[in-house]
Structures are given as structure tokens and as C-alpha cells.
Amino acid sequence: MPLRNEQRLRDEDLGRCENMQSSMDRRAAISICERIFQISFKKPRFLKTELESKDKNFDGSNLRGTLDALSSEGVIKHLDKEIEVRNRIGLAEILMKAGRSAETLSELLSWREFERFCRNVLEANGFSVRSNIRFTLDKQRYEIDLVAAKRPHILFVDCKHWRPGGKSRYMKAALKQRLRMQAALKKESVIGIRDDNSLSSFQRLSLIVSLADVSTMSFRETPVVPIFKFNSFLIGLDQFYDELSVESLRGSALENWIDS
Image (cartoon, rainbow, N blue to C red; front, top):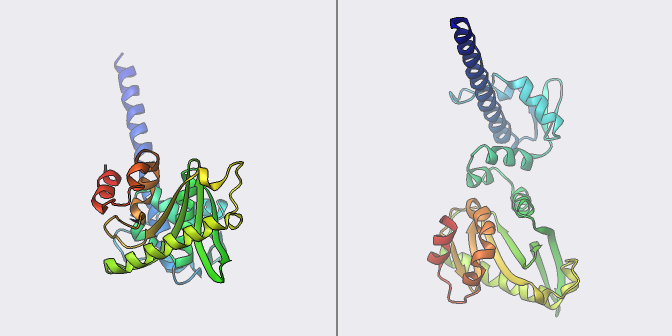
């Protein structure tokens, strides 16, 4: 009997060691991904030696395994002495799933990558998305960053890769986005949403997603949502759309339900 107990304890110790090693490997992999993400902001192709960091939080102990895994996913191309980053958005999503702040990650994205990041968040929530819709109406040219549809909602999204600024800046942006949405609805063919019914059957919303950690607010029925709250905003959209549709909506109301 004592032998069985000893064997059981050895098995439990082995299991704990394996779990600990797995946890250490994950931490090392995330540390390496962060370093690659930081370097590739300015240099999409760089020497492997540049991954070495004096940062005490950097852990390069699982470098080969991490590079092989990223290469197999098409995120990087692992060359002999170099690394070529091919999908920075993929890296950002890996890091966000590991608990890194969406706002912090977005600061290391170009405006075009930020737009793609917003699109991926929409698609992850089941929306069909079209990007960079350009059209002319009454001799006026318009462009909308993203149009996203998931019944019963259709969103007209402006992605603002802005640092913090005054409220008046967002008021002007919200008004312009509202006008873009209204123009697009007058010319439904440019939106390209495949549906048997007219767009009038959708609940329509103009929306601004901001890089900056601004207070969630709404102007002219156009919510301004910081990127790190965008996912929560979409998850709660069905339940709280009635609030969003009220023209007198205050930012505090949005803040309450997004944070809940």
C-alpha cells in the first residue's frame, strides 16, 4: 500500500512539473511574440539577434519552438538568420488573447493595421464586413472605413487612429460619420450587403472606434468607443440598441452598460 501511495505522489509531482513547464513555455512564447511585435513596428524584417533584450521580463528560452509555431501559422517567415513578419494583426490577436491591452497593442499598429484590427474584432463577433467603401452622391465624394452587417444590425464604422484629443474633435468626426452613413443609405448599391430585404429593415448605426482611451460618449446618435471596449460594445449591442437609438443618449449611459 505505501508503494502505491508513493507512486501516486510521484505521478502528481510529475503532473505538476509538466503543468509548470507548460506554463513557463507559454510565458516565454508570449514574451517572444511581444518582442517581435515591438521590433516589427518599424522593421518588418530583422536579424534574429535583435530579439535579444535587456528587459528583465523578456524570456527567450523557448525561441526555436515559438518561431516554428509562428512560421507554421503564416505569421512570420523564419529565415536562417532573419525573421520576416508577414501578419502583424495575427501577432496582435495572439497577444490580446494572452491578456495584453488592445489599446497598448493598437499603439504599435499603423492606421491601416488598426483598421484591419477593428475589422477582425467585428468578424470575430459574426459580422460580415466590407472595407474602404468609396462613392459619389450629388457630386460629393465619400469614403467609409468599414460597413459591418449582422442581422438586425448594420454598422458604419470610422476607425480613428488618434491620440487623445478634445471632445470637439470627436463631435466633428461623429457628425461627418453620420452624414456618410446617410449618404450611403441613399445609394444602397455601394454598400454591397447581400440580403433579400432592403437596408431599411436593418437597425442602422454610425460609429467611431478610437485608439485613444477616451470616455465612451455619443454625438448625434454616433457612439465613440475606445478600442479596448469595442468587443464589449458589440457583445451588448442586441440588448442595448434601444438606448443607442435615443437621440438624447448621454455618454454615461454607454459607459455604464459597456463596463457592466
